[in-house]
Every structure is written in C-alpha cells, then in structure tokens.
Image 1 (cartoon, each protein chain N blue to C red):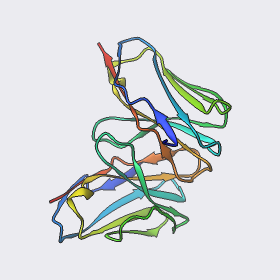
Image 2 (image 1 turned 120 degrees about the vertical axis):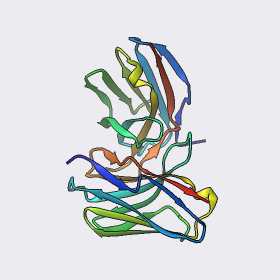
Image 3 (image 1 turned 90 degrees about the vertical axis):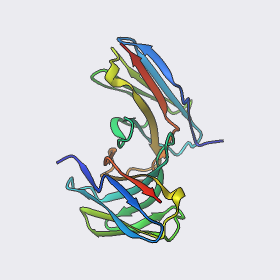
Image 4 (image 1 turned 45 degrees about the vertical axis):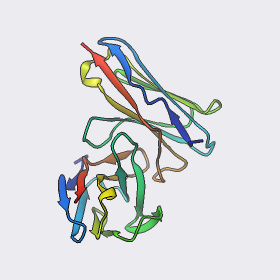
Length: 110
Length: 111
C-alpha cells in the first residue's frame, strides 16, 4: 500500500459547524503533515507530526485542531471556520525519502 | 524575496518536445530536492527525489541539482498531452522536515 487516503473528498460546512478531516497511511511512515492549498498557489504547511507527537505548528488559528491517534491516522478537527478557510486540505506522510500526498479534501465554508 | 522562486508559466510546448523546468533558492541549508506534478483538483504526485547535488534519471524524467548555484532543474523528454499539469519544486533542510515549495509552473503540452 503506497497511498495516503483522505476522507471526505469534498466537504461543505457552515461557519458554526464542527467537522473532521481524516487521513490514513499504511506505509509505516512516522512523519505526517497537514497542508492547506488555495487555488493557483503552492501547498502551505499547517502541522507536522513526528512519531505521533506534534512537532511543528505553523501558527495556525485554533479553529483548526490536529490529532494523531496512532501511527497510521491523522485527523484535522474544524470548528467555527471562516469562508476564507475554503481550500484544498492535503495530508502527506514521509519516511525521509520523499513525501507522499493524499488527493486532498476540498473544503467549502459557507 | 521568496525562499524558492519558480517561473509560473504557462509553458506551452508541442507534443514530443523536451520540457525544461527550473527553480532557484536562497537557503543554503536545503539538501533534499523534489519535483511534484499536480493535476487540477488533485494532490501533488512525487516525480523525483534527489539528495544533495547531482543528476537523477527515471524514465522520461531527469532531475538536476546544482547546490553551488542554488538551482534545480527537471527535464521531461518526449512530452505527452498527459504531462499537462502544474509542476512544483519542493525542498527541505532535513529528511522528514518542513517542505518549502516553489510557486509552481503550469505546463501545457499541445497535441
């Protein structure tokens, strides 16, 4: 299994909703990442988990809350988002020789 | 000045031509260099991974890294319409560390 699987693929949520994005990999990678990508822009790093511990938080607003329940799973909990948070949210994993990205969750905040 | 500069294109070439892409960077700590291909509304797909300076070839793709000039390149031979996508360079200072991306180059291969 050489994939990073993200669910859901599409998500529309209101500004008062709570939702979660999920990411799963079974490649034995011990580093996992959340990136945010706006249209026609490169991905921007949000969080890095290394060995299931949060190692980097790129000053992301607290309405985004990451969680790493085990070495294969990574979640991103969303609460009270703003319309400007609409973007493609990408999960990635790495063992050090390249980063494998999932297909992303396209999030629309209304 | 951005840490990684990449011409946004678009770069339009006829089918069968060689596509030449490049990035320049300013951070001398970068040691790991990658090229990704991203189709519209999809996640980036890793094409090439290179550590430090040198060349690497994989099928129709060749990646070059010149650390002395802080310059990396990707060449795509015998380009196909299916190669039409945005190509992102990315680099990091340590394995598994934060990736810094270039802005991406949009490539269009015309039949």
